[in-house]
Every structure is written in C-alpha cells, then in structure tokens.
Amino acid sequence: MTTAFPLDRPRAHTTTLAATPKGAATCRRIARRQLTTWRLNSTHTESFHSALLVVAELAANAITHGRVSGRGFELHLSLTTTVRRGTTLRIEISDPRGDRLPVLPTTHTPNAQSGRGLTLIDALCDRWGTIPRHPNAKTVWAELDLVAPDAT
Image (cartoon, one colour):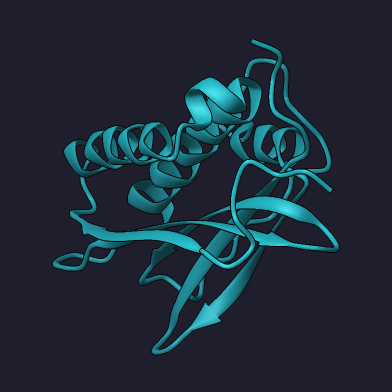
C-alpha cells in the first residue's frame, strides 16, 4: 500500500475557540490553514473541500446548539495512517452541551431554513458520530478516508 503520509507520524492539531459566529469563522480559517499545511489541498482536493464543509457545519452546530454562556468549543483535527484503513482525516468538534446530541433527520421539509447540516455531513464523510465528554459535554466526530492522491 502506498501512502502520502508515513505510518509512524500521526499528525494532530487542537484549538479552543469562542462559541460565537466569529469563533466559527476562525475555526474554518484554522482548519483550512492546517489542512493546507498537511498539503491535503494539493494531494486530496476533494477530501480537502469536503473536510472544510464538515468543519463549517460542525462549528455552526456547536455555536448554535451546543453553546453555553462563557464556554467555548474545541476543534481537533488529526491524520492517522493504519495498514487496515490507510490514511484517515478525523475532524472533532467538542462543545459543552452533552445533553443535546445531534440526530440525523429522517424527513426533510422542503422550505425549512435549517436541518440539512447533518445530512450533508453524512453524505460527505465515511463515518461520523458522537462521544460523551466529561463533564456533561460531547464531541461530534467525522472521518474521511484519504484513499488515493488526486492526479496532478
């Protein structure tokens, strides 16, 4: 198996942001910068753009549905390579509202102004879910398998 990332070097980046629209915008910029640093913008362009959409949706959900006054949210990005799965980009957004878990909608109202974000995440990612985080917080995660570099 050929991979663009060494098996022995996991890459990760974590930052805490304010749970505000400005914090969500900063989150998107940080994600773009980090993914570009890892060269995903040139080696895996489709996954790069999908990841930016996923970060935007998860950050928007964190500041809309996971906000607690005076507490921020956290972005964690990681690249890991395993023999079984190859290279995987994992996106995690943690917020302080463990009592409000995201639920994938089963029906859609055509003129609804919201409710499509998790459907988008479900379509773009290979896997996603939630894990509890102490105390009374949660992490929503999404993974994209980076199967093969794009042709240049």
